[in-house]
Image 1: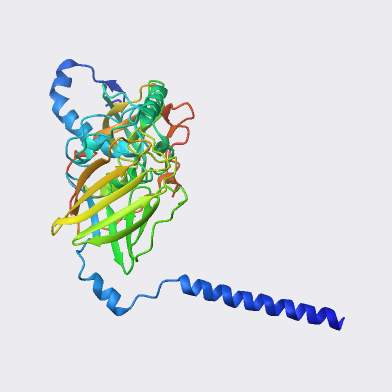
Image 2: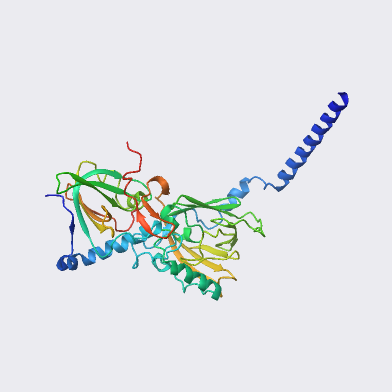
Length: 140
Length: 279
């Protein structure tokens, strides 16, 4: 329950997640690469972030989910998760209300190489249990 | 005093005459306003109008194996990742050396991270849609990525002999049967011939747009650059029409946390969380 940050380095988990990860990453690299490279993120690792949504920026060039994550000192750390643009996500079922401030969220993403409190979005589990990804074909 | 007044009125008369002649000169140059026949003629052309995006989902699906290369050029997507077919530019020794020098800098990102748009030809391969508009004497391409616009004149004008260097160059177009043929010259040195490859002041881009079925458009792009290339560099892409889509806003400066610094190091600014204005 505690919103700690876990590096998923368990080989079995990696095996299980490999295909999902590959497809998510394959889908996510293109648009992100169009604006900036993924160099600041560690594409060999995943991090899981659980906390309360402070803010969801439905903005260009990227969406950002800002999450207050409880820390060991009884306070919270603010984490930022970079996602695809509203233009891209809006054609794949997302809206500005998909992520709601005040709600609990668990995000899986690529952590920063420098250890700072940010990640590149891979998937999120919302308070209602729904899992959101950024992959898939656009809808007409 | 009377003399001075006469001189002044004479001067004003000359100015007025000059103004009339200047206006007449401008009027001579200005194209005739479009007629009903001009508008009707558009309906006989292949219908390129509407919103198009690269096939394979335009960023959603398709093969997208590699992360952006460290020397990723000016927002240009890896050609293979965009459903393009290309053998790769064949460079002259001078430009192969320039490419290698750029590569040696090992920049982690390019200025797109700072919101500088890629310009031509990279802007045509972004994973976002483009809207084509046909009006008398002109084709306009509204590009969602970075909110960009290309103006292609089809009114018979010639390309400038000594063009200014612009992100999109200067474009003219004409129809060869069912194919819109667009020639573009004069590119900013801030644009690249292809990812990680600079162009010279002699680069020319020839694009051929045609429908291959009612909602599929083929774009064949041929780049010539006698100083940089030993052979024309041709690539082709397929776009799908999305009749229900509209072009969305894309203001890169709205909430950009990404950056690349002068040394080429890429990063994320987190000291400004939520730079989007608070409600």
